[in-house]
Image (cartoon, rainbow, N blue to C red):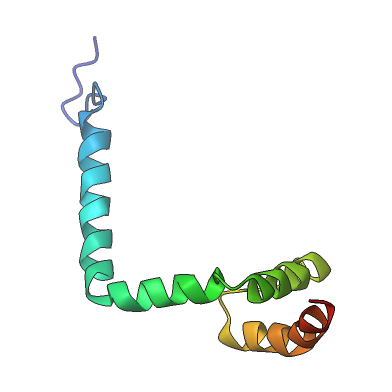
Length: 90
């Protein structure tokens, strides 16, 4: 047995991990709660309900794996390039 007083015992059981997970969750809720509307709006912009917009974003990503649907300008460029083509085929 090691008699070193500076040595810490390994935590046993799920409680240290659970406590850390709860702490992280509370921090995320604290930062996200004031901006819920913005988060939802951003999510809907990245994953639109409109089939033509969804299709355009899918095509842009298929053509360029570096396409960033989180970027407002990238989405706008994507729509301007592909929406006319998609709408002409409908």
